[in-house]
Length: 412
Image (cartoon, rainbow, N blue to C red):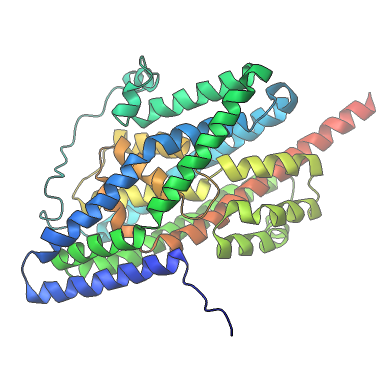
């Protein structure tokens, strides 16, 4: 007998979304408050569990990412250049995402106020830039965690990771502890993510029952907007990188990386695509020692597609809740999404936990994630493809730098 194929989580999430839409339309016709009284609270439980995981996921994943640099003296300039490159391209990605989504935000709906009851949002004056910078550095270890103030939590994680590296052999036990705790936290997170179909069903049913069909059509629009941003970032930023930094034809590059891009698109996992990405880059002329360092690091900290997704989703959710984001808040999205993307694990679906972090930082309701969770797989396919392509552009650039350095040494 052939073993029956089990539906994966993405399929169940889509089923939950479609079932929620169907149930929502039923109660839209019937009337009453059943979805708000009985289904929405179940969805709220799911959201609370997701919020509960924000701090530990960010704290341990970013600390582990810093530790993964291993010996800072050994990686030297290559590590610094890699990190700066990834930070810059991710920041560009957020800006591209914000520009594109703001061009289309007029097509996004405003939800009925009953959906956001108890989640009133009052726009506040944007803080001064120096106040923002000062507040990033905490004066208390636990206060940012209790208040879910994520930028200071990121700084804490970076400092602890650097401290563990600086401690050398004495820090090995702490490194092992962080690695163990990060694994435990990710396992708990995956348990919660498995509840996503139920949470999406309950929240989507209530959203549709209250708002009708207008929210359903907007999902297709927001996915399309994200893909426009993905493509623009790839065509503009990555093409310029391989052309001017690597001295390589963009067409040749995209042909060479096509196998890895297709793998990423179907698996939605940067880690699963890593071996193929390394092979593609080496075939295109990357130095093996560079690709073996840059690409695994990129799978951990370089998340351009995730950053675009966070920017697009944040503006979409803000529009749904009737919030007009200020320039200061969009700047905060750029900063937070850039740093949050560094901590996003290279596994399928991990971008949602980082999106909740971005929403919290700009004061938007985390419950809004339920509006797009049902189509998260579609977002994920594109953003993972973008992520691994960005990793490859860095490997090609640093390989050229390394070859130039070797030629200079040989000439002496």
